[in-house]
Length: 273
Image (cartoon, rainbow, N blue to C red; front, side, top):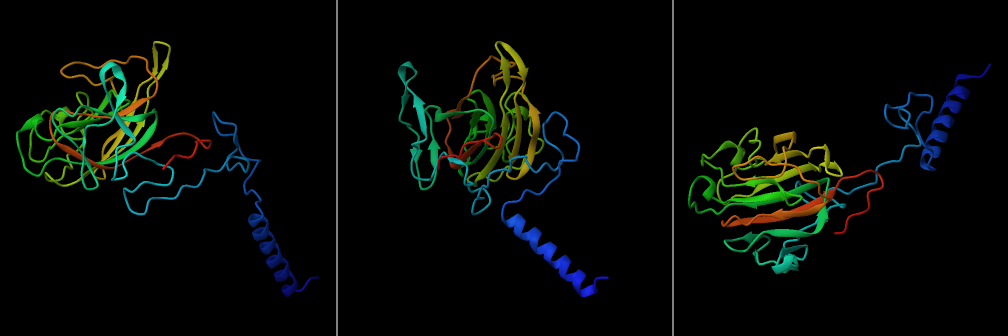
């Protein structure tokens, strides 16, 4: 019969061996569990690829390590505008101290890269000095794939039609709430966008948007009815990945801290910072 002390030593040795095996790269998991529906993996499958490591940003709202930094506070090298004939030209938007600004006649701004499924963070501010009312106060827009608009507007104590206020999927869905900050203060949008899927001319799956506005969920995987239209119903037309677009609607609006992440699986390539 083994003594209690001998048994304790055996248990300790087993624990140490397990720790050393884990440190050596042993895969914890099970192969005698059910196969997950629609997948090839067992529940707790040890062979399933692990997500790659991403370093979070230093502070809330700052870009994680796999983000594409669309504005670093210094230049607009990631952006362009369309000139005559559709060729890309240098932006005409104004650079400020850590922000960039649209003004009347500067034209829409587009990213030089194209995106599909993505996570987007940006911050924007309408002018502190209030001029105009309704749709004529700090009006701009964030167009996913250059055609699906998330409205930017100074909606602080500024009634307008519900599907046109800040945080709206313009012309389709009002935001669930209106968490707008005072004019001149910075607002944040965090958008998760699922691009539509097409098979030739046939729509297989519509686009979906989840939008956090100043930390509040204002759209929870909301289905888009088509592209953005003014005083009309949008429709879907087949397209591939397209640039992100920031709208010139004839009013001054500032933007800062803009970054984006392509959404994909384990084999997603590292972003460029």
